[in-house]
Image 1: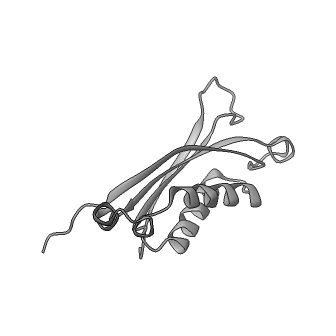
Image 2: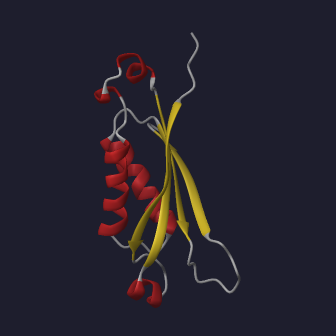
Length: 126
């Protein structure tokens, strides 16, 4: 028996304005964050049927990210990424694997940087 590799839906750089961070200025002023997703699932049923009900809706997934990122405050972007992954796996049974990248372009570090990001990958059932 062979197992097919997972197919992917990629959602890149969902922009949200939120109040995540560990210092008082970040919590008070807020800043922009970008969240990107790599969703692993079996797209073959949707590919054959052309039926929206057989896939993972990227509009609903984008709404989940926006809801999580703007309804709670996190000190760490790792916690934001973990919560997005947990909720995506809980709400979308077709998702077998998800990578969540949270990018913080205005991270308060004493250097000239483009951004700081964390990327996590979580798999259903383990």
